[in-house]
Image (tube, rainbow, N blue to C red; front, side):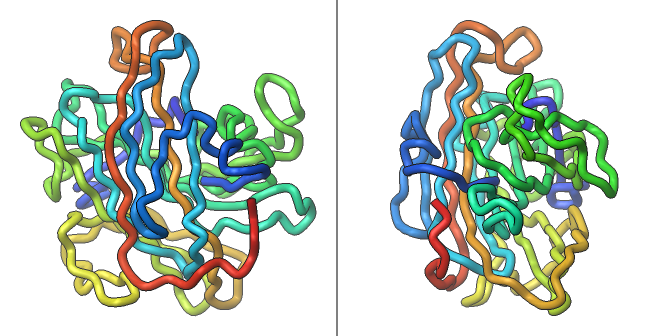
Length: 284
């Protein structure tokens, strides 16, 4: 996904995609993401390929109007900046290209020791994605958050024709008091995506231990941080596919980011809260 985006906090965090063509092996060729059941996924992966970012995606085969997932990094202190763990929501077929997929993604990662007590995060909308393994899902990289989509991929420089991205939120790490202590190895954050009756989304970040009801809705938003309001073209609520994804960098370079040698290691989990129904449309 985005590797140039360093992003969120408890000022943002506790204050602060993707589906794809082909079989599961195409979506997760390194077999990084293990499905425990439809609402529980884990990753325990080492990348020893020099200069190659390992990418993986799994559809939950569940659909919902938004969703709630607790994302946990189990090696946050020892393996800062080793990769990205994310939540994909509202995933569906592109209206003009049946082979393309549209979706939103919320990506999280731990930051360097010099930015202790922080996480990074971003939210993007991708459209007409046909290659999950392409850099940035085949969309040209656009680092400016605004109200419009960037240019479409033209098939050059790692892009795929027609794929495009709209960056919604790009936030530098800020202290997240809800669950990230630089003295601890484990970082857990609840990502809650709510959809209004008119079809618009709101994305919140909360402490992982926040109680939720049977639909995955937090009992209280008192400790929540609203990360983004997302205006859509919908006129009512939707129930589209949900998924999880991960990127594991090949190594941590001098600045803590992926380098060209050595190995990166990412361990963690995704746990969905609430009762969701099985997807009614086959997208893979």
